[in-house]
Image 1 (tube, helix red, strand yellow):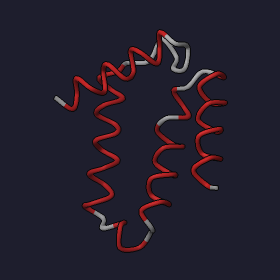
Image 2: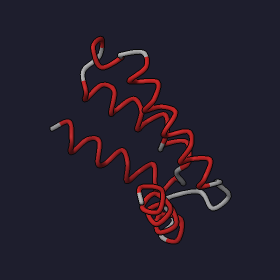
Image 3: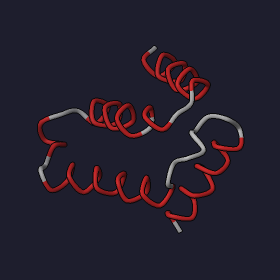
Image 4: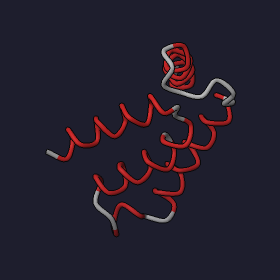
Length: 83
């Protein structure tokens, strides 16, 4: 179910011009899951705040697959979140 939601999100973002079209959505899903697994396996939540983990993971995972339009939107959302 979660994988289906990620696919829908990514495909919608690609159609709307936020994500690069040549990205393998299945691979993105696997990489994001690896990030999450690493956070728990290494107990990073004990060393870093949830907001630091979320922000850093988002920047590493999402920004790299965004178009210029997507990067601008992501940066805008991050600025609003920081307020």
